[in-house]
Amino acid sequence: MSPSRPRTSLLAALVTLSLCSALACGEPLLPGTPDQSLTLDGPFDGLTGAQASAHGRGDVEFARTFTPATGLGPIFVATSCSSCHVADGRGHPVFNITRFGRYSGVGAFDPMESVGGPQLQNRSVSGYDAELLPAAASAVARFMAPSVTGLGLLEAVDDTTILRLADPDDADGDGISGRPSLVDSSDFIAEIVSLGALFTGSERTRHVPVNGKYLGRFGRKARAINLVHQTVFAYSQDMGVTTDLVPRELLNVQTGAQATDLAADPEASGAVVDAVVFYLRTLRAPPRRAATSAAVVAGEQLFADIGCARCHTPRLRTGASEVAPLDRVEFQPYSDLLLHDMGAELDDGYTEGDALPSEWRTTPLWGVGLAARSQGGTPFYMHDGRARTLRDAIRLHGGEGARSRSAFDALPREQQERLLAFLESL
Image (cartoon, rainbow, N blue to C red; front, side, top):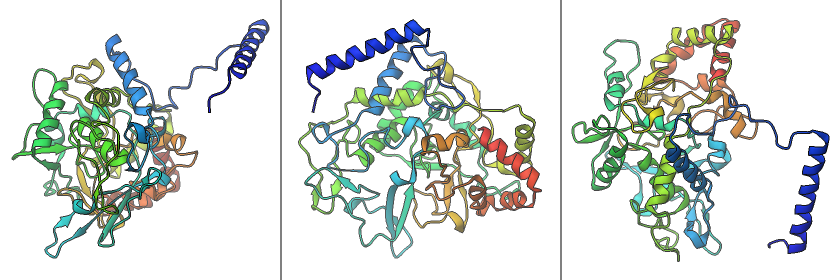
């Protein structure tokens, strides 16, 4: 209910009085500028005026809360992008999404699209049945929302840069066999590719087909090839909102039909999707803290010495981009964007595409030291938030990470603390 006019006038008078009092006492009118080393949100420096305005429009759309009247659901997980990515940071396990599927008799994985898969929409608008996990689902995984900062840099890395890091047969014998996630071509992917090509500069160095498939780089299993792909999937699967690229409403097996509503399709226009994609593309990289302190510098060397940097690649370089801060720059995400087998510890039976259930895209470590700031003060790590400390997270690294885990455990306590101090600085 809106406040009455007299109450609004009274509030305005109180605000004015407060401002006058502050001026009379010589006190500042506004809080100090936030410490940029402790915040994740904000655009890159160096955007043009038009680009800064476009970023601002995308910021508004990213925070927009959908309602039944504007196309929410009627089955959904969240009502806005920012409800999962608070302050553009990592999500909280309470908002984890659930993905599911099953294995056929010949070992092939079925994402169960015919009964509403691969994602569970566990909420619904009033008077409508939420989706329930199908009884036949034999593989279930829960994913925590990742941070969305710096994604434009990851998107702008040339395909060849990522492919050169791959070593699927462990030819160098270091126990690391990262491989690219390759996404099958389709009419949908072709349209995604054509839209992504608008941001690659004059020479096409990204979305170049590899044996008819395209390099994936976003998502826990690296199944999204660019930010357009990631964004329209999130609108559909997370909010039940249709777009030009994904115009079909979600299937709700509880009603036996598409989850129809009264909002006109597409519920998020092409202009809205473009705005959100540009916002994500131009969010600055996570800031570092105390990067030159003796403990952090020593910790980074230990990180490399015990083999962590073989998957969590410290430095990548972008290719050509029409956005100056993304154009041929070096940055430090601590990821190779490849799939790695993490062993039984992280095998939850669920998979996507050609990834094994135990294979995961190397999560970028940048921003890991700020996790708690978007998670209510308590940090949660790994793809589902199961680890409560960085030590716990390291000890969940099996498979290709087992050697580094053992090497960490063998370090003297003082050196372990230095390595953890390095991670906290990211």
